[in-house]
Image 1 (spheres, rainbow, N blue to C red):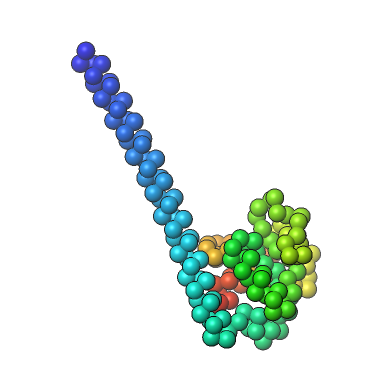
Image 2: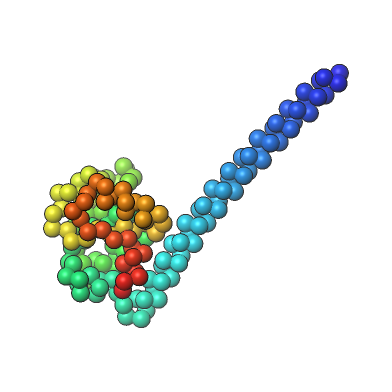
Length: 161
């Protein structure tokens, strides 16, 4: 009988430990998600503040003699950037997105392509990584694949304007 209670207690402890581990993972995932949202919020706040002070991305690009860009990322940050650039007559040659479902389609009449097709767009002056988090990691991945393209993160671009 004591053996049965000991085994039962051990199983309850194992189950409790397992549940704690699950909750810990959920907490870590939630913390990571909050960090991403905070990074995006900070980036958007800086962008809006500069725009309100008359410093626009399109003006900066024109001063740099860049009239055609590619965009990496069709999430919220990418959509904001695309809208801003198109409304200021900056041509967007392509949008790169990792989601397979979007590839081959179009967004506001701009082709959505995979990263390996970027080499076809030789007249593009700059690729802007517009995902709002982990941009430097993606920047390094792209530079390894495509070495002859000027690339900047949205965060760097906002700092420069």
